[in-house]
Image (cartoon, rainbow, N blue to C red):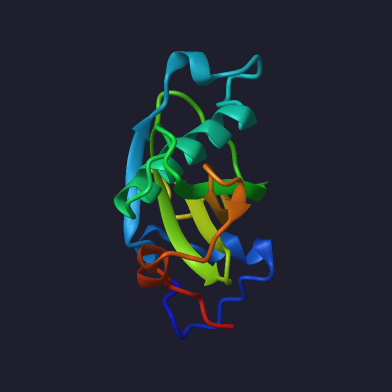
Length: 156
C-alpha cells in the first residue's frame, strides 16, 4: 500500500505496479460487457481507455466539473500514459481509482489504476495530465480550489 510519505516515485510509471486499491480515496466500479472483448478473447486495450475516461469524468464531476455539458471553466486532457500489466477477461467487475498526484499553476496529474475484483495488483495504471481551461475564451486558467483541495501526492 502506498500512502503519502511512502517511498513511491511518481516519475517512474513502472512503480505503478505497486499500487493497491487502498491507495485511492476515489474508486468506481464497472462491469465488463461481452462487446468489450477482442478477437483474442480479452478486453481490448482501447476499451480499457474508455473505462478510464468514464471514471475520470465521474471523478471530475465530484470536483464540480461537468465534461458532459460545456462550461466556461473546465479541464482538457493534454496527455496520457498507460501501462498494461496483465490481461482482463470478460466477465469481470473492475475497480478504477483516481488520485491527483501533482498540481501546477494550470495543469495537474491524475494517477489512475484499474483492478479486477480477483487480484490486489493492478491490471493497468496510468498518468493523465489535465489542463484547466476556459472554453468560452479558449485559454488556460489557474487551478481551481477543488483541485487543490483534492491534491494527494505520493512522496518521493
